[in-house]
Length: 501
Image (cartoon, rainbow, N blue to C red; front, side, top):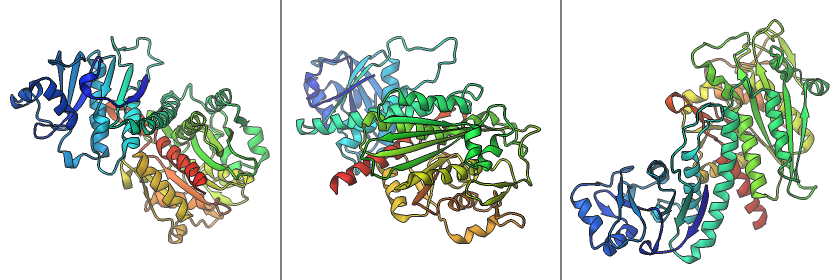
């Protein structure tokens, strides 16, 4: 898929299709008015006839509009002008792309990037147009024997910007949008892979492939023997019931001076989570292949970082294991000694993600990090609290939390902060160990983060619970690629801060 930006008037465009907006009720956008003028009222006459009201997502494809050089004109309903926000903007673009792809317009010049979106500039509109286009066209069909291919698929999109002064801004937006979309695709591809293929070893191998694309990337793989040598007994216990042994991939990206402290990203990579001895219900258990979406999103973010060539030092850890019931599986009642030396009573083997992450979070102390962010499909309680729309955010450092929230707003990849008060720590008390791995039903997302916080006292840390946002269920089942946009935006902002200083 090819993207570019230009600044031009609609009547001069020679293309398979021009895309312009129509507001409700039947009110032409500025660009649509220009087309209407040169077509001598052809478009406005159609609207008066009732062919298009302008409601959000409505479309009307016109052929051979008088005096217009392009073969087609696609009118897209944008709703009420004053109510056009970022969510509606992306929905309009998705409808536009699917319509173009279905109607054989292999290229198009899109003027929707000139619409006024509340609080958003040209950079934001163009970048999100690129990301939305590629998200809309994404298909995971590599394991299908027969692939459904569009006869004349959309191959080229040109987004128009208001003036020539905006061209450099638009080009930067395309560059960033392409890098983030490529990271999202990598995240989706790995996440959607079935668990008989995507094992801990497979996930580690994908990390190794990343090193082949950049001289700035090196990868170290820790297998069961290396994990045992580091005392990661908690991590190892989770994978003990599977024939697919655990792996930890450590990806080092060196984009800055050696003395610059790294940003560390840690992703939970449970390539399949049966619940272990505390077996999950059978319904929708197939979706537990998505329990590695935290690691997949960290992996996707690193792809975006490589493509953007960011001047940062970053360490990414993919903490991969498989949680299965077996004669050798760990049990409720077991007490595990973590890498930190703290002991944990296992109350439920389905609260396994935190047992993997706690050792990974202890391991990354050796990098003297500037900050650490872990990403995990950690708790069903987060879905209950925030649904499928927002990622749960908890942190021991207010400035870091505010940075992440700011990145979430900029990227449209929303997060919501939950408290991490000491009041909740009491729910983890155990009579037999330092604490347990379960805090009960109340405030489950918070107590899970409280558990992790006991292993992050030596650095500034934030936890992203993506249990609700990492994938969709139902007829549109599949990974979303979140929170790659948020994490990449966070890193882009970090570069901007350094340059300002």
